[in-house]
Every structure is written in C-alpha cells, then in structure tokens.
Image (cartoon, rainbow, N blue to C red; front, side):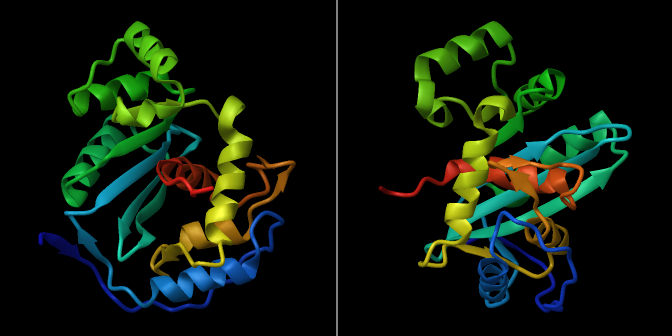
Length: 223
C-alpha cells in the first residue's frame, strides 16, 4: 500500500468563539478520534476534495477527505490568503498526486474560470454547454459521471451544511479530524448560521468550512 506520512503528535487545545451550527461535543469527539490515527494517506482509498476558490483579497479553501478504516478522515485542510490562480491550480494537481485516487473534486460553481482550469488539468471536458447538459442528464448522480463537479451554494448551501452536521453529530462517530487541521476545527467550532445559511463574516475560516462541506457531498448517509 502506497502512503504519505506526516507528523503524528499535535496539541488538542483550541480556543475558538462558540458557534451555533455544530455541537462542541461532537467536534471534540471527531478530534479525539482523529488523534488516534497517524496522518498517513492511503492511496488505495477513496478521496473527495472540496474547493472554495478565492483570489486577491478573498481566501481560498481546500479540504480533502479519505474513507478508510470505515470512517471519514480529514487528510488535508487549509485556507490560503492572497493566493494566485496558477498557484492554486498547481496545488490541486499536487493534492491529486499526493492522494492517488481523487474520486471527485467539488468546486463552488461561482468561479467558472477555475472550474475550467481544473477540468483541463484533470483531463476532463471543460466546455460549459457539455457540463450543463451532463448535469441536467445525470441530475442527482452527477458525481458518478463527472470528476470535477460544479456546485451551486445558492441551491445547495443549506442542505450541505445540514449534511455536515448530520455526519459530525452521528452517534456512530463517522468523522475523524486530526488536531493538525486546527484551522478547520476552529472554523467548525465557531460556525455561525441562520436557517443553515452560513454567516461568512462571523465564521472563522469560513472558506475552509465551505470547502469541508463541499467535500462531504461525496459521502451519503443511508436512510
């Protein structure tokens, strides 16, 4: 099994403003679970990547999830300030090589140019007429037919946040977040929303939280 190793020990202590979306108990539980697993990427496992593009004065969030040991593990989570377009395209390429099998990349549909660039980088058809026709044809199963998936926050933002809450607070402890990813942990703990609409101004590392909920689309709970 191919793998990439990282440092294994991190401090469990975080100070974040308390939000109103996720219970602190559930987040602490995911961190405790994440601390039990070494930060080793299993290239034989499935991976999903969430990308919330932002350039110039906006932040750029990337989150990668892995399904292994019967749980969802955060294997990469970072938010970049004042990033360049080309640097972030290269970063996604680096991540693809790092994890091996990148099943789907979910990207905020608002940034058309970046979606086109990633589709070209991953060898997909970047033509938007083709993309829209494919989405209309596949409907809810678009992830099965398209690696790079455009996602509308206007249409799916609330349901994605609700889905993240269900995953994190599930009694079966489905998610593990290693303490290394302290920006994501701070963002989740401080997430503020009204009727599942995330308040980006009041939520710390909100672009990374958006990237996390995009990546979570890959994982569906059985009814």
